[in-house]
Image 1 (cartoon, rainbow, N blue to C red):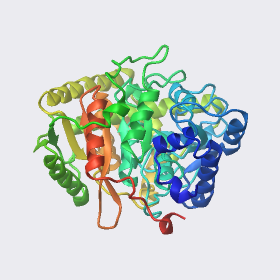
Image 2: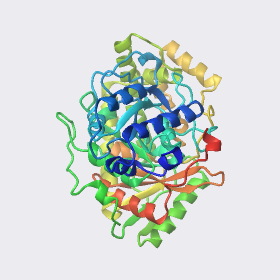
Image 3: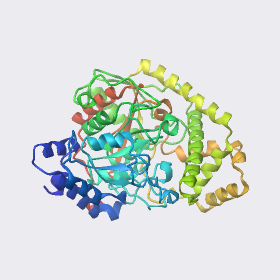
Image 4: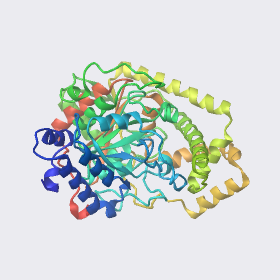
Length: 495
């Protein structure tokens, strides 16, 4: 098997070849490692190389399970492997070694996936781009001058470049769906509690974050969810199990669905014409498949939701910075991270709890919307992928941050309207994804459109809580109606 043949298979297909004895797990791993060496210097997707350990593991015992022998990568944030560093994109955590393997990763490894590396992320998974100072910029295989998105940017770049058919990812504000949209991949964010995060983590980002993968095929994500789902011991959330395997759901068409559409930014910022066009064309496709589509927005104050999201975000950053300092004694954080942590420390407990309580208002309103519509469809992102370095802090903003830190003016910044300005600045490219995180609902980005420059543009669907089955049914139907698996970036761009 050569690389071109390797890339013709998804994870399910590769596992079938191994099971039939048509290719060995060792041969697949060597192909993945060779591809990583070939494109790695160009895209900078893998930040911890575990290739030697993976080869040694295969030499000791043959893998077994539903995905036995398939090469795999995990994200360098919260997808811990015992004894392996979890740097989370931060120079302050370069010496931090994970004390335990998290449940989802352990379940994937028990299913036979061969983990040979960890993928790049922005510091503490805080951005929709992947340009951590600790690693350098990760680049989009479709156009290396542009970002693959974030925070699962390394995972998405590795899959789009053909290193692996799918890779571990997580999503606390869009971090599965945003890079999936920018890299022409399928990205499913599960419901709160569907995939456990123990034993090291529980309510990560107050339950806003969920783990799964980015993939090139719907069935790969479906099987990854089958393997990872189900509460572990002590999990803070226990959700009703699926009625049948998600892999089965992805193979059947849904009944005719009522789908509401929103293309206006919830925070009043511009939406690129290509992102609107992606939704418009998908609406036509959906109607041709027998679904009813109409423009209808949920009754949710988008500005209030963005404010609640950012206040959680500030508090989480403050806690992450303090944890990193305790673990390693280092204080080497990026300027923006330090500023966000200062804002988090400036909130009092009452303000934080009041903001967290508003999540219930959003969840109830979205629940009411889902009484009338099976799904909500939006652009996944509001703007196309930024150029590498385009979103780097200006010297003026960097000076403002340093002054705020020096004057300990975080409290004043919170009262000055800075939060609303931060919402505009930081969320204007990705204003559609946080709704799913705060309400705990499942959502997905589907690669159904490419713009005039040949860059992918994703379309997002949000289901009611626990509705991964409906999303996977629709995703499978769309994949069969308008296939995307063989649409990959050319090597002239990647290598």
